Image (tube, rainbow, N blue to C red; front, side, top):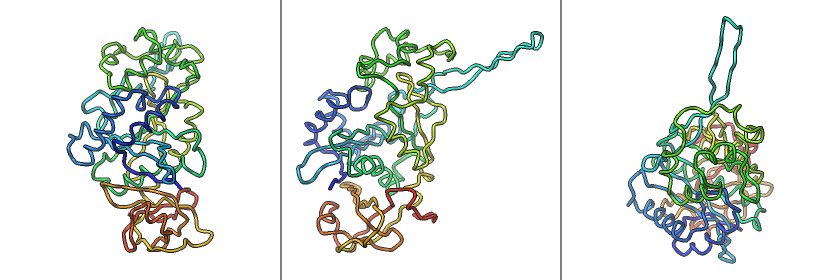
Length: 347
């Protein structure tokens, strides 16, 4: 069994171990103890109400209760770009035409953008490769959606998620080699690390302010625009199953897509409902569901078979203990798989 809970200071060693397994490319989980410690501290202060909106961010971990291992991390930034600029490229186009010559050229462009300033962001999703089974990846990714559903007053009405773009084991990125390398005069790994540790001023200082023509890039770079790293493909599919879509915004470093959705239109938000906890055996042949406590300061989520159409959810004593739930407590529930969702829109 796995449970999602808020990060705490004692998780630092576990997060460092996770960061060592990312292989680079996950800028928000750098293998840097000071950065991760500060991230934990900022998350705790967010829950305590001690951070201004521009600094608020929630970090959750996936814990294996039997061993205490921290096997995954996920996070939500409340409002990106209010303090540190949040850049991406907008994929657009320009038309060059001559009536006299009967020439019409429709050319794709990349323009530096701050269009998502102030929106909430799903970020820092990583699961230990040794624990990628038992639906842990889905639990880790989708648990954040129930937190959004329960405490939506803390977030923007629009939610985005940056997906890791294409790079190889040597941290070589075709997109970076064709674009960023020429402006930043450093390798992809160095720029990625600086951005992940909060040093982002160089982006505005060095990136071109004018649009870039896509056809000037190498064929390899053009091919990876809006594409994800193979390891990130399952995460993209999960978010797309919840209603997120790519709308022509990409990461300035590796060209990975930014997915976005209105908070109210996210499947887990629309179809989740509040039910009463009961201690007992789950019904037979019931679909697997995400079940979350409604304790803001100690939010917890796990998976259990349940019938989401009823007004209650039966939990074994073990699961109830991990949720810190007693009989009669209100819990939020939604089916893990969209195909098991009701067509009804429920709060």
